[in-house]
Length: 428
Ligand SMILES: Nc1ncnc2c1ncn2[C@@H]1O[C@H](COP(=O)(O)OP(=O)(O)OP(=O)(O)O)[C@@H](O)[C@H]1O
Ligand SMILES: [Mg+2]
Image 1 (cartoon, rainbow, N blue to C red):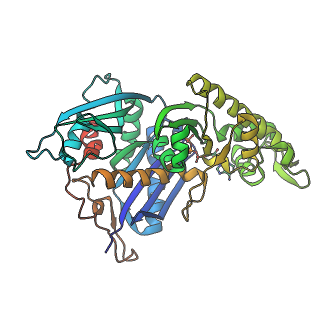
Image 2: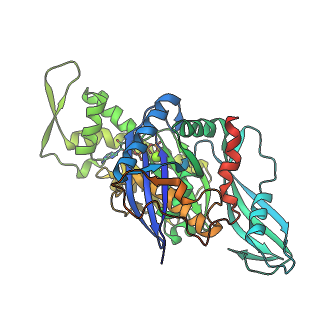
C-alpha cells in the first residue's frame, strides 16, 4: 500500500506570504491547506522589519493550520534570487565499498566534496545541483548508485547568496517557531516544474513577476544557467493607479484586481466604475480602457527592463520562449502585452492543483514538488521524518494523520539534511 507524505512550503513574498500543506501520494500532489496573508516587513525580497515579518509568517501558518486542523513544525523554505551567484563545481571521491559498488554514502561524499572550495565568508551556499556524474571516465550519468567503479566524479552548479540576506530570512522563520527542513532557491524550485522538459532543454526565460520584484531565471540544457532580480513588480502598478486616480492604495489594488487590463486595444470602454477620491466625498468614474493605459505603460516598461536584463545576462536567444508567472500575470491582457514587447513566444504558467490555481502560488507549489523530487532521489533526511513536520492536533483532523515517512527511505544518509547542519550554527 502506498503511503502519502506531507510537505509544508513557505514562500515569503514582498506582497504576500504563502504557506501550502501538500500531500504527495504516489507522485501526485494534493494541496490540503493554504495560508495566504498580506506581508509586512518585506521589500523587494529583502527583510526590512523582522518583527513585522514574523507576525505575517505566524498568521499565514495559522491560516493553513486552521484549514487542516494540523500543527506545522517544519517548512520547506524558498530563498529569493536577489544577489545569487551560480558557479560550476566539481567533486571527486574514491568509491568506498570493497566490491566497488557505488552507494548512497559515495553519492553523499561526492556532493560534499564539490563544496570543499573557497566560498567567501560573506556568502552562503543555498543549493548544489548535480549536472552529471562520471564513473571512471564514463560521463552523462544521472544516478551512479548501483554502478561499479573506482572513481566517482560529479559536475554541478553551486548556488550561493548573501549571508546577511539568508540569515535574516532564517531568523524570521525560526522566530516564528518553525524549523527549516530544507531551503531551495525559489526560481529553481518553481521553474523546474513550471517549464516542460523541452523548455528547460532548449533555452527558456522563466519570469516570476511578484509584488515588489521580478525574477528572471534562464534554463538551458536541462538546468538553471542564470538568474537576476529586478526591483519592479505588480505593486508598482498599484502605486501608479493610486497616485493617478488619487485613491487609497488598498482601493487601487482592488481596482487593479477587479477591472485591471494590461492591453489598451483589448480593454473595454463600455462600462464605468466608481473610484473614491482621497480627501473628498465624491467619486470619480473610469473605464477599464482608461486604467489599462496606466497599467500598460508600467508593465511595458517592466518588459523593456526584462529585455535589457536578459541582454546584460548574455542571453541572446531563447528558442524555448518565455514563461511568465507570479501574481500580476493574472491580469487580463498581460499575455498580449508581453508578446508585443518581448517579441517572443510567451505563455503564462498557473499551477493546476485545486485550491492554488493562481500564478502567485507557482513558487510555493514548486517548493513542495522540488522537496519531494529530492527526497525521492536522495532519500528522506534521516533526522527529519515526515511525521515530525506536521501533527494532528485536533479531533477534527483526518484520522489517518499524522502521515508517516515512507519507510524504505528513512534513515538513509542524506546530503539534503544539510540545511539543518549548516543553519544550526547561525544562531549560536
Ligand atoms: N487577480 C489579480 N489581478 C491583478 N494583479 C494581481 C491579482 N492577484 C494578485 N495580483 C498582484 O500580484 C502581485 C503579488 O504577486 P505575488 O504574490 O506573486 O508576489 P510576492 O511573491 O508576494 O512578491 P515577490 O515575489 O516580489 O516577493 C501584487 O502586486 C498583487 O496585487
Ligand atoms: Mg514571489
